[in-house]
Amino acid sequence: SGTPVKKGVCAVDPDVIPLGTNFYVPGYGICRAEDIGGAINGTDIDLGFEDVSKVFWSARHVDVYLLTNSPK
Image 1 (tube, rainbow, N blue to C red):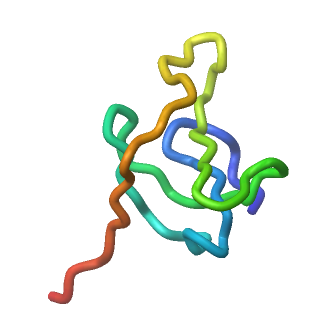
Image 2: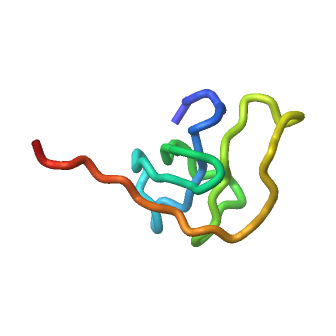
Image 3: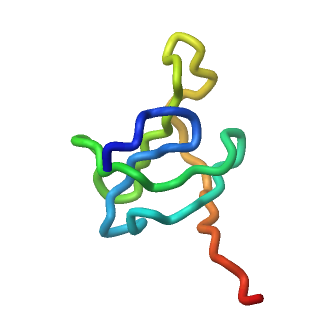
């Protein structure tokens, strides 16, 4: 999408999570599906970080929560 990689920008499989979707990852926070990533297939996601030397995350299974806009 051209969005710079930083915390909160994530790669997804758009067949599972549509691009532009906001979702919550426990232990990470709010994420926006902005990229498809070369190795991201199915339910895998790639969490964005500004500085990979300070990454606090490792590969694991977690539930993610898709966020929707509430009607006003």
